[in-house]
Length: 387
Ligand code: SOE
Image 1 (spheres, rainbow, N blue to C red):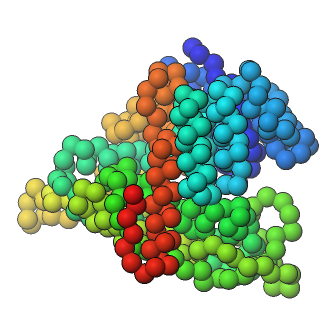
Image 2: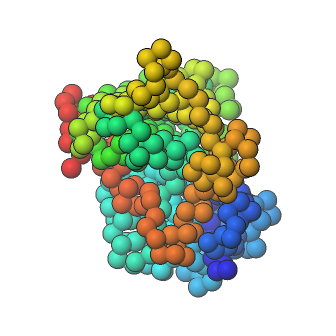
Image 3: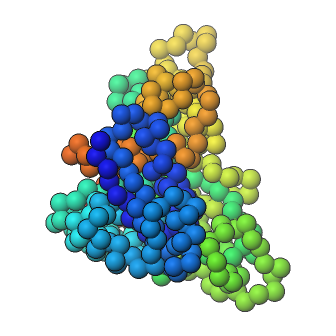
């Protein structure tokens, strides 16, 4: 079984998720398409990287990502750093002939995303952007239903991603509120997951009409350390600096295939934790998904008799997508970790078997173009084409 050495750049929250997936993937998917080996982890100092290596099970550590990218022993570069570093690392990794998985959004800007896409295309390496939620088995099941025609022609997609970790104005100004680091706000951070759902489940988006808002215009400066996602709050007596990205977006959509829809994303919706949802209406039925109840789909089919029509719950399990590799009984519980394990499986399969990988940097680039169109449409107050 082929072993693939991973060089992981970044040892924070996403580093934890990816490390778990490298360790866990062969335990679930057996025989595994290949064995990812946790070779080297990089962080900003040797001390922090050493700690990450011990914690996440890497053989080596480094504070110099360039050396790791050039290391002939490394097969895969995994980018789990803030958005402002994705392009430089990915382009160097492509030039060094490494396969690349990058966290989302692919880049801060469409120009950066395009350069990354060009670099991997020219190098002929495999590439993936980590929109992991489409690997939730229930989301893959929704895709299967749609492809089988169970709800007929899709008419409407309504997607939301609502969180509340930044609803308090005294939660810190993390890099996620700075345009120079993040590129955009709620749109890039979480709205892009919903754009990925829309394209995956319904098809390419042709036109958008968006409204972007920034409700909280300044936040307390964070006093160093990792991004705590709103869990630390200042007493209100520290220096505040401006937020220069959106903190809420709403947009209408027109798809190339004629379907219509909407997307909303905010991290300021009190009471919403990871409320990533979609409701899809077709000529023959409807499908609803809510990540906070991620083992289930709610489905309604027009073929149900009139006197018992309504939503029913289908739990994912061994007989639904990816299920044979997961747990033997429906509703034992699918988590964030499982989505990353499945993502890793599909990435490694693509490398080893030479099959197409999705979402790729091409998808990441398209999502960036659509995101730009949403912001442009908000500024101009009119529909904007995405091509
Ligand atoms: C913060 O909003 C965040 O960590 C996102 O960056 C992730 O993509 C999402 O999966 C969870 O929330």
